Image (cartoon, rainbow, N blue to C red; front, side, top):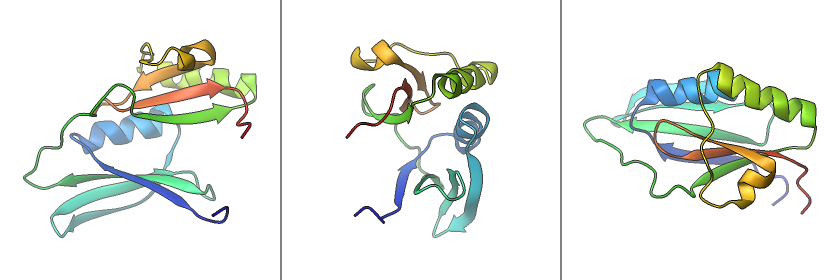
Length: 130
C-alpha cells in the first residue's frame, strides 16, 4: 500500500469557512472542485504532488453535523522546528487560535486547532517514526 494515495472526504457545514481554514491557515492549495454534482458541491484541497488531499462537500438542502468528538484529528508531523513554528504562526496570523487537545499527548509536542466544523488539526513538532 506504499504507493497508494489518500483522500480524506467529509461533509462540512460551511464550505467557505472550511476552505479558508485549510488554505489560509494551513497553506493548502485548491486542487479542484465541483458544483451540483448529484446535489453536492465540493472542493479538493492539498499540496500538488503530495500523496494525500482533503475533500469537503456540502449536500444541497442538508445540514451536516459537527464533528462527533474532540478527538477526531488530522495530525501533521513537522520534524523541523523552524517549519513547525512557521506553520503555527501562520494559523494564528490567519485568526485561528489553538485549543487544548482532548488527549494531552498532543499538547506535549504539538499545537491543536479546531476547524469550523469542530474537527481538529494537530501540528506536531517531531518526526514520524513508525
